[in-house]
Image (cartoon, rainbow, N blue to C red; front, side, top):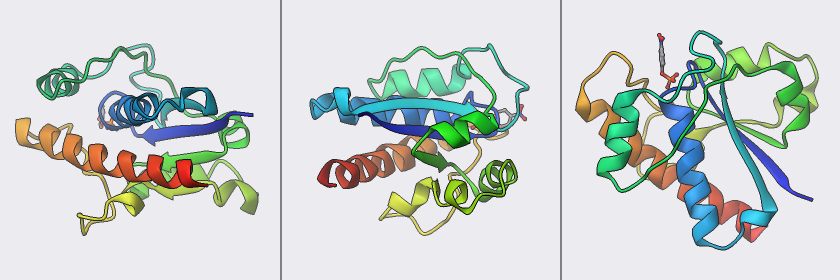
Length: 156
Ligand code: 4NP
């Protein structure tokens, strides 16, 4: 049985595809790839079908991470099907939870920065309107948060 983890942001072109790629890297580096099914989606379908944002891809490449991506919209079926939904910010959290009235579904939803032990904010900031520093900050937040998440899940 695979543990199914879904990373969610708004557009599914900046934060959540990067979170997926970083989490995947930690899982693969630990040789645990058979234990996990990992995916990402956006609460808005506005960028469905697109690759990740070029600025996200460029920044990831500068950090030695290469990945490909096709954006898609998060659906109520994802909420039923996945074991854990990791959202980037509180707005994503509200949007995801609004798709179901079932408390069991709501319990699956967690803020990404719950696993950021160096940060003091609840949200992974949306880098869309910012400059290069914003993308680097998001990379660093997601790199350490996904590493902690992976350690926690691997020890279960
Ligand atoms: P993401 O970033 O939610 O991290 O993928 C955004 C992508 C697109 C937009 C906003 C945020 N947008 O307004 O189109």
